[in-house]
Image (cartoon, rainbow, N blue to C red):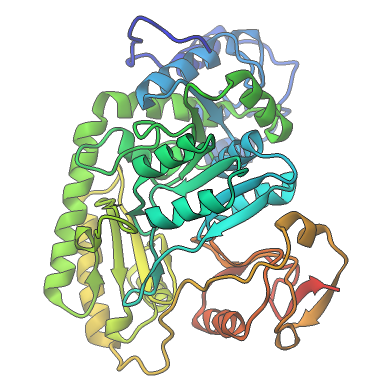
Length: 486
């Protein structure tokens, strides 16, 4: 993708425009998909609407091809690169999981070391299973009151770099699910000074590129690659994402890596949603995210003034492991009202018809973004107050710690593909796990392949199951057994 000297017109949405031209042409389809503009599946057409199925089309010359874009998709990617301040942007239709994996696979091959925090999304460790890279974990600080993992300390990152000078990259969460950011600019400089790439999982930071008074974005901080989950706070359709790269990364090689795993039948529904959403944020992002931040700050104040809960924010900033905080995140600690976060999550959904993003053992997250309105936020604040009044307990028997430092005994790839046996959960203590165990969301593994199973981890798994956390990962859907190395 060639750099443009002239400023691009962010009012354009080339994929959307091409689809509108295609719609007007009334082309007779003798290609896939087989529903033929919805005619072959009337029930689906009735459910999604003719507007939708009519543009669920295959790659063709007028609409370009995601695997090798030369026209409208290429133009959409150039517009996205400019809007996000990147050298190159890639439209991704396999979710930010696909973006993260492409990023790691671009930087790493078998045997390479990569420095990263352990509180990463499972997609990062999945990428290590695929490529055979070796994780060097920087265990994040933990806030003892909230029980949550924080960012990486600068000195911990520098220590890891010094002890592993042949590592090829440093990966950073920006922000964490809870809204916490590390000192990204400093970490980028450390990585570059050591000849390493800096990769960023920015699944929850799309708005950093368009909002004001928000933490620094990965591209502005000088990172080499970042995965941006446009569908989370950016308004595009679920499963659509951007992979952004800086000037030190070869775009042609990145495209080849993406094409190893991404579909050859890119969805034009997803791609057009990225195109239109990028245009929306480029033109209106500042005012939109200012409103989102203001709403979240208002709700934080109301929740804290009412008492019991603790909606945390910028007061956590300590200049290092909490270098900055994403004020759009409405993260609320629930243990002080004697309820696990997952219990509040369930009550909100079952009794108040309010669906929040997640509840874990000590916190909930209400995800605010461009589609939220003050009246719904008032309803959430009132419901939390009502739940405190109706369900408050003394908190006896509640666990507090979300994050447990792992004991790494083997690489994720070696453990995942090793000879294994299935054992009852109670018989696995001391063994090395060969699969993932996590609550989803947020999708941060409690156990990953290659990690030793401890009593503390088993207690956590049993407790999270008993409280109703949605547990995923193992072959056994009931998580009564775990696969361990022979």
